[in-house]
Length: 175
Image (tube, rainbow, N blue to C red):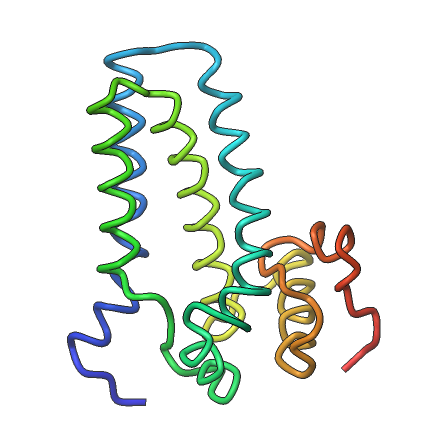
């Protein structure tokens, strides 16, 4: 598929920007605040991400926000269709700016956890559709996600099947 340079960067920029933004935020917070409970806030951010990933994919992508673009992704899974990096990077920078401006480093670290989850999501999703990386985890996620593309009523989690199990949307049938 021939992508324009703008479309190429709109899809791929997060793979470069998020590691830099996350690392810079961690360095700033550790240098300025260094508080031991930040690991708990980071872990909470990762947990929140997993719930958000499931809920947003299930209802945001399939019912409301971005539903048309996501439908196009289901039609062409190998197309470079996703939320623009301009949107995701702006949300990240705005959230970090606000939390640090209001001297709420816990919220910034929570956002770092969310962002590590997001980066994991875009990496796994990209590997599912475009990569050749394999292994037990990746092969399992690839099978699940392919089942989701075959029957979009099931398997909304991309990086984990945990919430599909909790909410009864895990598809155990083979495709």
